[in-house]
Length: 363
Image 1 (cartoon, rainbow, N blue to C red):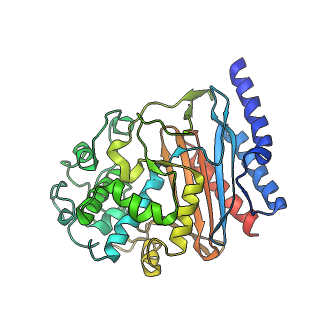
Image 2: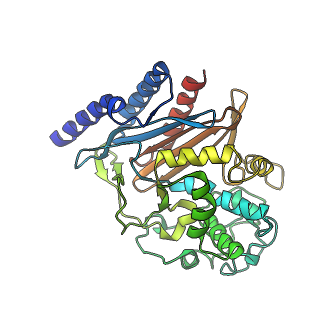
Image 3: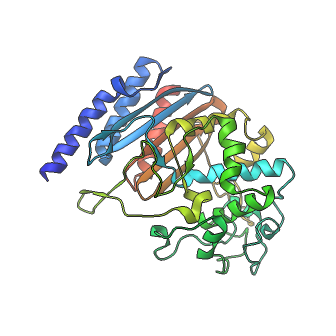
């Protein structure tokens, strides 16, 4: 208990000192930055977050980034703007963008049976398309049993399909919305089939390089990754513990990248400025899908979609061992905020904080 108290005190001190030591850019007005930092400090204290990094984009430019608290609570390593976190499901918008690039280039058909591009995925009782997979309308199941905590290493996306590929669809595609990370593994396989190269190589050359994302990479538990954050989870009694082990190699397209807040800010900028895909493609991705009976799902093609204060919000969160993450954008304002924390199960808290930051910056 004495150790936990000492750790909490040090986290609080580091939050107060972060603005002077870690800020990577100063394009945000001082008064707004102070208010944003107060909001961050309040939320970190309320949720007990050990370490958090933030990046803010205004008018399609990275205006400010910083880190707060501890990236490694055992060794008292401060969190920075350059701290690397698992993305979790923010990997899905990346995969969706890769798919839509191939659609633009005439190499992938959104409405053809997915087996045309991913032969390793067996035919099911109903046809399944890339559009349905992108919008979580496919009927491909999500995790079951202990899959989420798998520590097995898979050598490639096609090998990772073994975890679920022979299971039947849960429902006829298009009739229901059901979130699925496994469905995005199938999309990663389709990217390989349509492009003729490995998924990781495709996104590196066609997305990360054009966007200027130089820190993002496939998360490999065996690799030495500079500035990698340690991860934590809270027990029911509120004690901080190290996160459980997990190897994400089976779900790279749906939750297997690691990067920094600044790289994700560059991704948001590249999306909003049509560096990666055209405006008409963005309009498709950022429009909520509907079930066959007309029910709006609140999810487009790889992105969550909603409306607030009369403006469209486009966003995605991530939740897995070691992290909680949130990427929030308001396209018509050229605005984005990226939040990445090394504490599990606080996604709603990050979503709330991202909107609070947006209100401060865009008031």
